[in-house]
Length: 316
Image 1 (cartoon, rainbow, N blue to C red):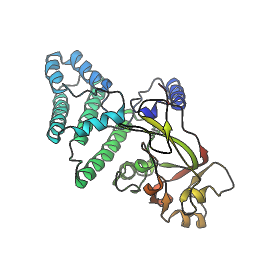
Image 2 (cartoon, helix red, strand yellow):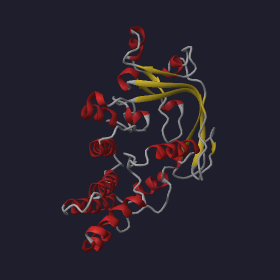
Image 3 (cartoon, one colour):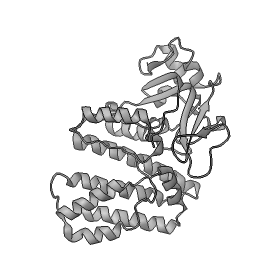
Image 4 (cartoon, one colour):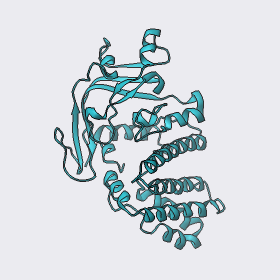
């Protein structure tokens, strides 16, 4: 887990439990933007075993591409400060490695996995290669990212034949864009197009409580406190204002509940179909001026609402 916000005690316990239950299956994440050492090691290890004559070429192509920090937020900040031409060259080299591997005769059952690891590296550096100093470049990068995320989920499903439970931020798993600045084409919509009704998306909501967020540099902003890891903080939000989705959901007589937006009574479905202000708390600090609008029934099949939450304890 390179993302510091995913290195928390509760998630560690959950993943450990799932690992014991599903230890005969491979596990993975669809995300990109942090090319961890394991991806390079898996590709280079496969090449060394099955195509040793190509090891010098792959080593050269990947030279200088490994992250120099284990902090995903810090790494992304560093990556985007590189000159655009450098980022484009990094993408070219990572994609050239992918193409070269695709041209080789498969060597054993690990070929498809090595290919996917190489593809993930190509995806990451391709995303960084867009000119994100411009609004159009940022839009292209965000659209590319969520399409790549959907590609990875569909690949996993087809390759393993397994059912998949995927975790992601509301903005990414929504069917419709609810964070048009950063997620203009969410992977939830892409996955529904590709998988049909086999794909079900579950949004989360809470009225008040704490959360973790990361920094790429500096100190925690006013109203937040340092968390357990470097460059991470703990923020909190009070009860939602009366015009928010969260406020109305919190008026239900159940403190915590699961709502199926597809089978809710007609009056509820009419309310769920209308866009209203909502919180989208991701990996950064949230303030009320960042509120966006979401029609819950158009965005999610199911909504889990909690009255109050507490920021997880991050692991060292």
